[in-house]
Length: 177
Image 1 (cartoon, rainbow, N blue to C red):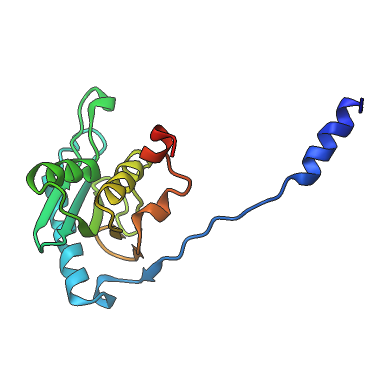
Image 2: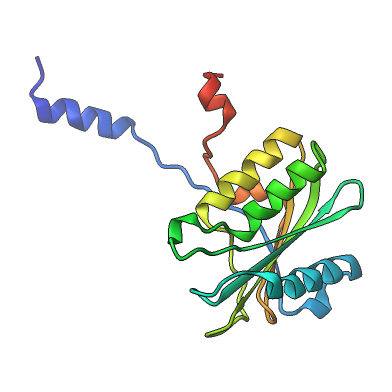
């Protein structure tokens, strides 16, 4: 029998490292976008004013361009009991699922307005929203393109929302596939 430390070392030698990377586009302003992306982003920026964010003053708006051409929107909805609040992305996904069942989302523009600070850097969806968007991609079988921005400044475009959640947990994990 080998001493415990030798067994541990042999397992370490078999270990390897791997790397995850994503590609995304970076634009310095909305003027660099094509007309349809610029219009969708402006709608997301405009809809931030409908957010209910009396506690954080961090208004988020999301606009989805569905495959059939329809636009759907969502905003964050806060609550004095913080865990009860809902992010704009999940409000939007619920609206789409209810009002346009099975309809794939082609592009999802997300913008925020920080009433107490800077709104010029792109902000990515939180982990819970990444999971929800990834699940929506899986259930429709279509990639969702993301446009991420504040009220001005730089813009990130990600071709597949699932890229924001590598090694995601999904239905295949539950079903043992």
